[in-house]
View 1 (cartoon, rainbow, N blue to C red):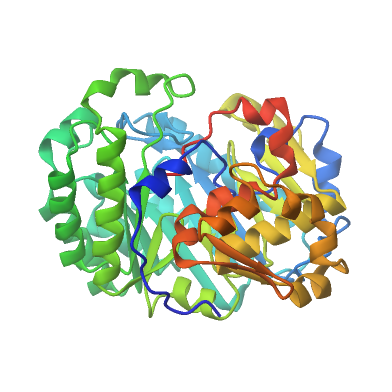
View 2 (view 1 turned 30 degrees about the horizontal axis):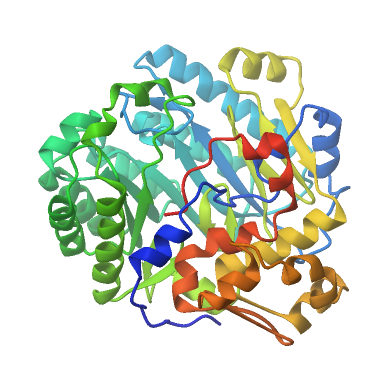
Length: 472
């Protein structure tokens, strides 16, 4: 149990010391390790339960993810796999194939129940209300719900009607996540996302009136034309709306990976010092309003499921970020989706043509994937526990893995160079004892750096050259 930790004084110099590029650990190994030697037959075996993960103990039920890539307009900060299109025939065709993929995946899964559902994008609510109902009905026709079923969906307030919200509610969604990023008009103009406070607040209020139990608002710091003062004003307006969760993302400016980032002007973005000040002030302000710092960039009220899952040791991390329901296999549907099944990861093909062709031939739309070794499984266990619960007991590690923590990670524990576990202990980020490892309050804000100490794949040239975002 993590409990509500005191918010530490965040030393700007210490944070700058550890500000470097690194993985977000939505998987371990991370996506650069995936390869095309992992093929359809491998994923089929995983779906049939022939490649189980030895730990943590997997749940029998499943989590389904649906990637709906379409958007009405392009937000210049976007780093998602998305398609700008208002061609309703194109969208309807994609929906047809999503439903075919549901049926194909289901044929491998015997009678497993649906415990968790998430729609992401793109913009899932670029589907019209009738299409939302059609996809929701197809899912529930193929799967029976577990007793503790939960469902969440990402929404764009700019094109969201009352009918959209009602359709989402009617097919089982009880949590929505609103993209906002910033409320300042100048910032919104710079990133091509015009979205007023009244519009955003209206969606929050309507969702609650309908009966949604949890509302999340996403913010991004580091965008063009943001200042310390302007972002503080945005944050106050968001806090007044009282969301159940807040996500505070660091903008990763990656014009080599995302061509549309090149239309943004780096000279208009806050300086590194100002970004750090925005982060420190925002963290302190959010937590002063009763939110728990869950980890990395997520905050939740004490009554929210994320907080309860953290207390109960059931918090997990996957390609949807922080998640409840540790141990569920995650089965992705749609282009670019990444599944986590047993001891494997599998990424689907990246374009509609290949996606349609695979399903037309009756094949799973596999592009690449990865089968974890025993060492990968052990390191994933450690990284996940630290990312989610900020501690790992030696007895807990031995019970799960059959290994002795101090001896298995002797090399990592003995290193003394900058960025090593020993240097982090000297800086007050963590404590390592015979009983295990515990992350100190300030270390929770640098948890990606700590996790990197256990990442053997970062030694690979390919991984080093990948465009990871910065940890601060």
